Length: 307
Ligand code: UT7
Image (cartoon, rainbow, N blue to C red; front, side, top):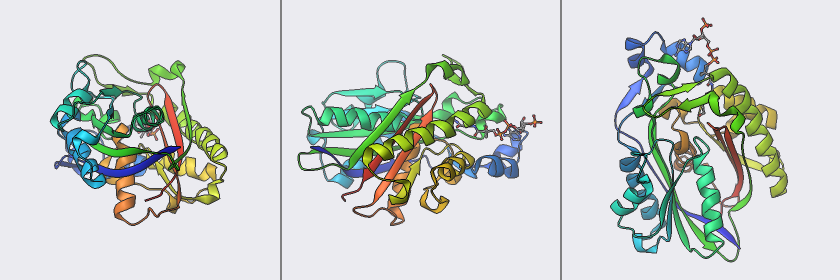
């Protein structure tokens, strides 16, 4: 009994903001941003709803399913268009759905938390679920604060998950949260994102490595068996440090932060889409999906592609 990934879709705003452009208004440089983060450019625009609708529709098209065939919509976002209602309800309406729809907020681990939620819903009677990660982080960035402005960006990614009584793509999960770290990365009502970058960095590497090791053990495989790592895209140095500790060469990691920056809950599906577009996902391959974020939260999953 399990869950299959049936279709994927992404959406990013057209507007590209380069490091050079940010350097014109901030005391920063392309060299600093590229060296310290790996980010070269990012996409800015849209909203969680508009990007979520586009990505969701593309995932349904890819899976060849209609709105009536979706039983539940789970939308991960840190940046809902409004506090109420949930962005998921508006996205569902735009997509022509009348099924249950709700938001999940686990910050940058959001897409993984949403998949975990969808798995539970599928194993308890639902047939097909649309999972979306959609973010409008640029709305909550103080564009005069170089600490955050160079990192965060907008985008969305989505997947259709389907119940399968005969097998599963999702082999294991390891999720967690540590609210004692809540003040390290915050966005207050009416405020902007603020972060103790160094401390988030330090903990992120530890959480990714710990949860990845747990997920690998519970899937009964080792890091050598992984064809691909699809990590949250916050900083190339975090990806390098975590993969090194896990004994995984960087050429097995998918990196898209150079083009998209940190898009929080959209980053893992954006990376997945890139891997797929480049023929890096093959049937039978094992992949590790792993993320971390404000909370702090973290989540790793081992997947075996069947498609
Ligand atoms: O999605 C989950 C949340 N996000 C993350 O996971 C991000 C985690 N943290 C990081 O990625 C890194 O800590 C940052 C990229 C945020 C910062 O990199 P760092 O290597 O930790 O730099 P730092 O904060 O230690 O700053 C080094 C220097 C400082 O100057 P001084 O004090 O050495 O004179 C900063 O003021 O770099 C300065 N600095 C900048 N310089 C140019 C900080 N931001 C910038 C900037 N441009 N944008």
